Image (tube, rainbow, N blue to C red; front, side, top):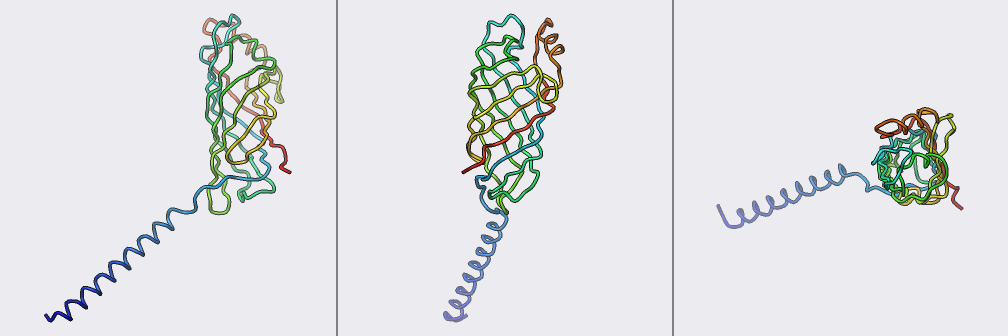
Length: 207
């Protein structure tokens, strides 16, 4: 085989490899999709469910600092006036909150807390997934009779960062009325958990 023919075959092979690599790279880019973006607009979720785990358990003696594990699912979420194109999306939150005492009396009244809940959203902005949000809590209010008549917690003017950044308020209500919660706190093992069955989250409209 002449040198010119060998050179021609070499150039053709290199071109074929380059074309194949380009096609594979393009396909990988297409499969990767658009990068996540921050969701914008005014957020509102009409449902909430989940679980609060108390460590140590709550009782009427107190004497220990309290750590609360939080798992919550937000449903019926919409964001008006922003980039979100998915209606009635959901959010799944997980985090930890710390309080000064494990006394069950803290189930009623306002108290200072620290901690945050990270929320992953199912909604999208066009083809882009939404970045997570972080709800940072500094104050909550326990109520003996929430919107569903049971023990719950409310919060207002708390900071939400990431997607839907801004001032956020909400409520989560349990499946126990005040008498049932008091009985759990009076039990030998104390109240270890509280199941959440209702609630809502709303955000101040952006200017």
